[in-house]
Length: 65
Image 1 (cartoon, rainbow, N blue to C red):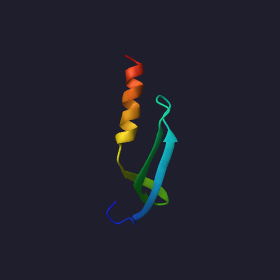
Image 2: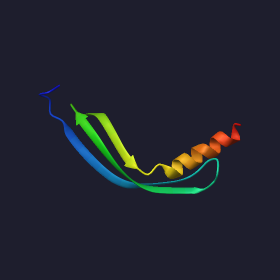
Image 3: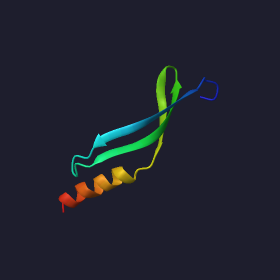
């Protein structure tokens, strides 16, 4: 709605994990934006380099072929 109050909240962090398929350690910085309206998150944006995640997904697909 044009007249409703919108609040943006920003967060920065580091995602870290281990790939289930490759066993490789994965770590990357990310920035996230959350737009809230009436106390609820109505939009979320995430900015990060997806290269490590894409490599893990490619390895998973290779196991299915």
